[in-house]
Length: 84
Image 1 (cartoon, rainbow, N blue to C red):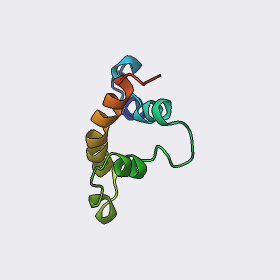
Image 2 (image 1 turned 90 degrees about the horizontal axis):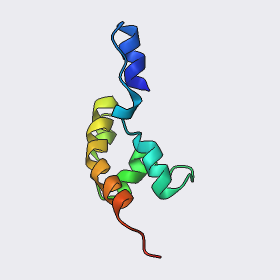
Image 3 (image 1 turned 90 degrees about the vertical axis):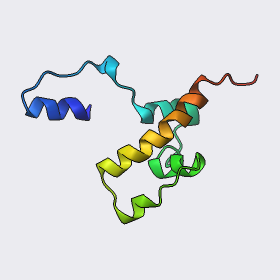
Image 4 (image 1 turned 45 degrees about the vertical axis):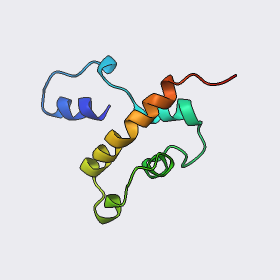
């Protein structure tokens, strides 16, 4: 977990894993493991999230902002009952 790695370097208390959700693992549960299927670019495309700002600047902050837009769609898909 990236947060705890950074906190450890700062000699700060680590955060409990139950305080986080791995969006990649969530996407894999929903969409499978095909290569590229769960990339941030593909998720943005599939959920119609504008990722054009990612072409101008690609960094952790931009990815975080895009993921904040994608995350609600993942949750809706995860909690929507599937038809039998």
